[in-house]
Structure formats: structure tokens, C-alpha cells
Length: 413
Image (cartoon, rainbow, N blue to C red; front, side):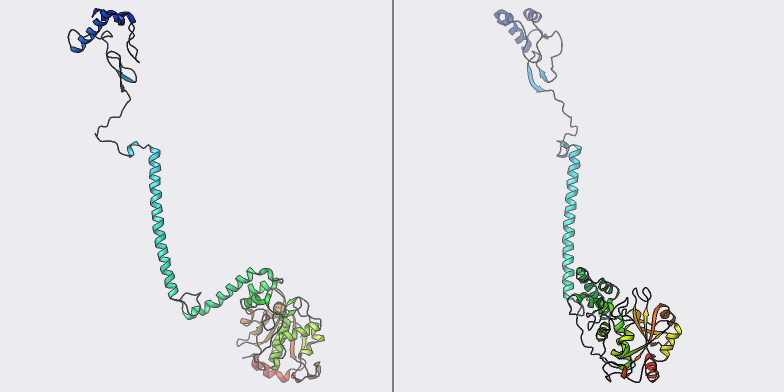
């Protein structure tokens, strides 16, 4: 033991990383070595007193591994470990940090949303298929664009509006084909003219026969855009947008004579031949002096007033009125006043507007909108250029007494 103590006093303390640094002379001496080994064996077997190599200090431990009393590294780590007081092993989520848990939760939520969307789509597709099967199995026999459950009355009201909507769409798609913007205005402002405007770009600029029947004293309501003459060139455009003058005269002629040989197209030609197809209204008043008799009519100019309008109608003659722009409609044009309604108001036939023609008017409103007023009658036979007997020779603008009774009766119906 003394040798052990001496050896400890003569050497260095064991380092934390390996064996003791005792001097080599002590390790090489057999006696000392034997004494040391005996001491070590005595210590381990319990024979003799036990002494600490470090002078009574506790066994040395490094910061990282346990060491034996002799300073040998045992290899056991000193790493800190959490204590599981529950005695259970940690689950999968115990090893995840907060960020990983949030990502996992977001993925689960996204998966649930995807499942819900897929299930909703499946239900929607199934519902759509059922609706499609129901709709195909039941179709409106009058108009397939209208619900099958709609009544015939509702279907008949919707069909024209749907037709107009389809036609307006086609007109809009081909708006560049209309050099005259008045055609587009006509389609927008006049529903009854939409079909005419739709077909105008590809139509022949010719007129057709007027095959309707008329009775003397009954004035037909004619419109500029009638396909039988609306495509004919007149003035600075088509008669469909410039023909209020010849159309108004054609209505007067048919009502006064009961004949249909003078149509808006034939009267428009006569106006053009006289060089009077000009002006804001498409027909210059110079035609009344030069060629009105060529179409079997005569006119008498009167001062614009409410009383004169009543005077013309009281004599049984129709009144040809030139109205100003922004009055009955946006543009200046010609209209024909044919007589009185049951309530004493006057009946107006406007060849440019079905809306204006759909109701009667106060005579004061018409006279305040007028810029010119004429009484219309049948030309005397000797006033016609061809001397034909197609006109009534017993009626003229200066003497309408012979026809006033017949016209008055029809205009008051």
C-alpha cells in the first residue's frame, strides 16, 4: 500500500480521457508492479482496507461519460433523457414539433374539403342528369325554348320576344354590314322591323306586289319597312328608313280609291323621277307641284293649326302632316291623319312607328308637332299624266264634297 501511495504521490492524476499517467519506472519495476497489483487485488477482493486513489474523493466523472475508480472510460453516455412517469412509450405525435403538427392538421383539413367537394360534384352531376332527363322527356310543343309547363297563352307571348332577341343578336354580330346606321336604329326602336333589318343586307333591292284587298273609305296601315317595298333604294337610303312620304301617300290613295295599283314603291319612283326624293323627310314638297297628279292624287296646302286640321277631317279628307324631329319620334317625317276616334280624338297612321299608330291623339298635340299641313284628295282625271280612269274624277282637293260622306263614315268607324 505504501508503494501505491508513493506511486500516486510521484505521478500525475489520471486524465479524464484515458489511463493513469504514473511514471514509467514504477510500471517497469516488478516489485512495485507486484505491490500495485496486490494492492489492486486486495481492494477488489475485500482483503485489507480500501483506499481511494484520489485521496478520499468520489469516483471521477467526465462531462460526457462515466469513468471507473481507476479512471477508465466506461462508454456510458451522460446525455440527459426525459423521465416518462406514466411508464408508457411515446406515440407518433410525441416526436413532432408544433410546426409539423400544424402542417399535419392542414393536410387533414384539405383532405376533408376535397372529399366534400367530390361528393358534392357527384350529387350535382346526378341531379343535373336527372333534370336533363326530365327536360328531354317533356318539351313544349309550341316552342322548345319555353318551359314545357308554360301555358299556350304564355308561350305565344314569349315566342315573338324570343325571336326578336335572336334576330337582334344576329344583327349585332353583323353590324358592319349596315352602312346606314338608321337601319340599326330601326331595329332597336321598332320591334316589328327587326326581321326586315335582319334580312336587309342580303335582300334584293326590288319591290313585290301588294296583294291585300282594300275598300274605298278604309285606310290600310302601312309601314316603311314592309319587305314588299322596304328594300327599294329611295333618297339617300332604303325606303325602309326614308319612305314615310311615299308610304303616307300610298295609304291615302288606297283609302280614297279602294285600289292598290299605287304602292309605296311606285309612288317613291314617281317622287324620284320628279327629283323630289330629298330633304330631311325624304320627300320634298316640290313634288306636290310637279308630279302629285301622276299618282292619282291632289293636295291642298293649309296653314298649320288645330282648327284647320279639324276642318280637313270634317270634310272627309285625310290630312297629310309633316312632323318635326323630336316630336312624335326622333326624326322629322310624314304621317297621315285619317279621321276621328270614338272619343273625338284623331287617328294617326305613322308609317315609321307602330307605337305612334297604336292609339289616338289630341288634335292640338298633332298640330303643335307639325311643320306642314295638307288636305289630300283624288286628282281629277284630266290632271293625270296618262289620262287613265283609275282615279275618281269627281273628287279633288278643291272640291271634296262628293266623297266626304263616304270617307267620313269610314273614318269614324
